[in-house]
Image (cartoon, rainbow, N blue to C red; front, side, top):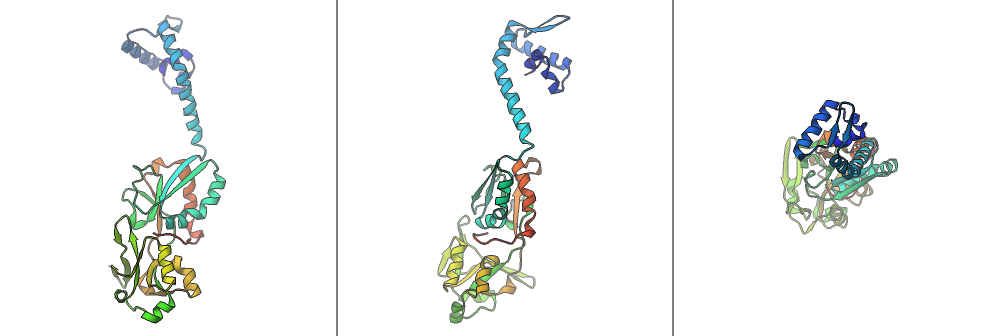
Length: 294
């Protein structure tokens, strides 16, 4: 590249390199090649036949490099490109979906690719820009930003179910009920129901006649009177308000930190992610959406 800059006689200034340094660089290159590239006199510098031939070969490639570098420089000032996010379906509904329409309208050159998955992905290895998960599921070396309000779990059942089987008074009473379970496919196990009260926190592994890998199906089974379900409170809120479901053991399911957006480094944030972050920080202004799992 130095040869091209000297012969062109004006591009070397863009490198902010002195003439003496360029001359030294050319002499080292000539020594490595074994033939002169420039013919020097006290008054002028001109390419040799070999230098001219090399220049003609390199010129198109150097021009293409200059063009690409110029485009990359301009792209720093506009929001364009693809942003890849891994999220659970519930995380997408609660965090991304409420801001997506406004974001896409504001930045038409940006592409947001959301991969709905419940596994914990390696962002760097799998080339994701960011992920959305609950705080307890974050990788330890990530930058994490809270992007949603506190959440609560809810133990719910249909009125007709409770009229037949009675309402549990303590979490341990659930062991005598028909519990609707959630299977964590990535872990290969059933999700243990978590409870906390008066400083006492514990998990219960409960058995029952039904197991699903989608919370929507768990909720519907509870509405159908098939058993007791353990779901996010805001997902069941509409059905609780209508009387189709009753919430039980509410004092055993206190709020916990909600969703976080996490990404590998503050120094390598893409323009698209940088534009999205302020919108996600405005989460107190929007309610949680329903749908999907943690």
